[in-house]
Structure formats: C-alpha cells, structure tokens
Amino acid sequence: MTDGYGREIDYLRISLTDKCNLRCSYCMPREGIRHIEHGDILTLEETGRLARIMAELGIRRVRLTGGEPLVRRGITDLIKILREECGFNEISMTSNGVLLADMAEGLYDVGLTDINISLDTLREDCFSLITRSEGSGLICTLDGIDSALEAGLRVKLNCVPMRGINEEDIIPLTEYAADKGVSIRFIELMPIGCAGSFERISTDELIRRLEDRYGASTPVQCSMKADDRGPAEYYTFQEYRGQIGFISPISHKFCDRCRRIRLTAGGFLKLCLQYPDGVDLKIPLRNGARDEELKKLIADAVKVKPASHSFDTLRDTIDKRRMVEIGG
Ligand code: SAM
Ligand code: SF4
Image (cartoon, rainbow, N blue to C red; front, top):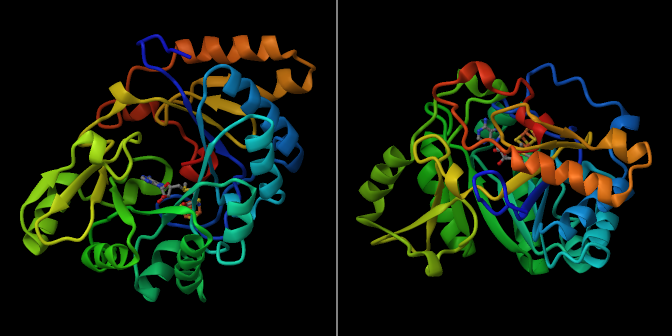
C-alpha cells in the first residue's frame, strides 16, 4: 500500500487491549481509564481477519502492543493465526515484561520473533514511582528479559528518559544492556495523554551525556544497524560494547520515512499518532462486509495518512486518547 505521499505502508501495530497491569504515569492517568466495553474489543478471529486482509494489501510486519499485550487472553492463539493464516514471518511485541518469564518460551514456540521490553529504570523505588505499582514488578520484568533471551527471542530494551525521574538510570541501563548483549533505545517522550507533566530529555542531550561517559559517538551506517527498519538511529561510542539507539520523534522527526498504521483494540485504524483521524473497521466487519469492501476502506484511509505529526506546533489537534488506549 502506498499513501498519498508515496510512502510504502507495510508495518501494522495491533493493540490487543487497553488494559494494563502497570499504570505508568506518563501513559495512564492515576485513576485509570474507562476501558472499552468487552463486546467492543475485536475478537482474536476478527483481529486475525483484518491482519490477513492487510497482509494481502502489503503489510509485511506486525507488532502486538496495548495496553499490555500479555494480559490479553489467547495471545498465543493470535500469534498462530498471524503466522499460519496471515503468513507473517516477523511478529513482534512491545511489552512491559512483567508477565513474560512464564510466557516467553510459549510465545517463541508459536512464532513470536522479536520483543521490545520497556525498562525505564533499574531501581525498585523509581520503578514503583513511574509505574505506580508496588511489589516485585521490576524483578519480574528482569526475569522476563532473561527468559525471552533463553527462549531465543530477539530482544531490545526501550527507555523513555524523563528529567528528574530516571536520569540517573541512563548509564546503569546502558551497562545492563551491554551485559545482556542487547540493544537499548532511548525514546523521546511525546506530549500525548498524560505525558504533559514530565520533561523530555532530547536525543542530542542524551548523546552528549553518553559521550561524557563513553567517549566520542559515531552514527551507525544503515546496513550495520541493530535494527535497520525502524525509526531508531543507532550510535556506537568509543568505549561502549554495542550500539545505542535513539528514537527522536520530536527533535529529529522521521515522518517522511513512516511506514506504519495502527489498529486499536476496538477496531479503529489509526493513521498517525498525533491525529484522531482514521477509519472504524469494526462496524463494517460486524455488519458482514466482504474482504474487498474492507480492503477498499483500508486502502482509502491509507491514502489520506497525514504527512507528519506537529506535536510541537499544533497541540490542539493531538488525539485526546492516552497512549495506553491507542497502542504505543
Ligand atoms: N505495555 C507495553 C509497554 O509498556 O511496553 C506496550 C504499550 S506501551 C504504550 C508502548 C511504549 O510506549 C512503551 O515503551 C512506553 O514507554 C511508550 N510510551 C508511552 N507513553 C509514551 C509517551 N508519551 N511518549 C513516548 N513513549 C511513550
Ligand atoms: Fe502499561 Fe505500557 Fe502504558 Fe506502562 S507504558 S501503563 S506498561 S501500557
């Protein structure tokens, strides 16, 4: 599928639920959200059908997200459908990792290939503060990372650095990633939903700080990147064992290379993170639309995918939904 700006759209992020076992303060309000009614969540079969139709339209890669995808019952069945009925060879997931330790092997066995695990801190008190959770969440996530690696999944770590919150975790996290032999990517905080009360640390500032610790940085050429298809730009540092990725939606927009669309848990096809625009697919799906009709709806929507976000200038147009509802 090609959009109105000639970008090839071949990457679909599927949100499986708006529920989560954590309550990260930059993603979800303290009081939680009003969840989509159970009956309004796409069934696994409906999600599978839409994914197959989109595969026929040219989607090549899918990522499962949420909310927390691992709280969705039947997730392994969906992965099987995505692999066997839709023909996806690359199926990834973004997860907080809390439930991963017991699930990693089973997920790998049914066809999950990659997992990005969100890890903003290595300190328990900071983990509790960010995720508004008590107990062993951090330990569970770290166990989950180990299990994912043992199972054979390709693992990457994601961290959203925030001033005054997890700044002091930046170096411990890069050291942890190097010890585990995985890449870590730092994602600039986007002004979506609940993120407004936190201060973003820009990629340029982060690179300067990492240079203070690890020496001069060099951008990694495309073919050598730890991940050559996503929006992350990778750098090596003179004294760092590995590559560090930076996803900079605000300071270095990558919209001209955007290849993605999003399907929410309620069956809405969302075209760009910033804008609420898109097309509802659930109603036509449930009203008996044929594959060809759904294909036309999807392809027509993709044609009007916005050129770029304008988080910095057009704040009034930002989707009011929180990240946990959209599927980050
Ligand atoms: N629950 C899973 C997790 O935490 O990985 C998947 C869903 S979560 C919404 C996906 C990613 O979005 C996480 O890495 C999270 O840190 C990131 N995220 C949430 N709100 C964000 C924001 N305002 N700006 C940047 N990243 C954000
Ligand atoms: Fe849940 Fe992920 Fe949002 Fe945290 S970032 S509240 S883990 S959906």
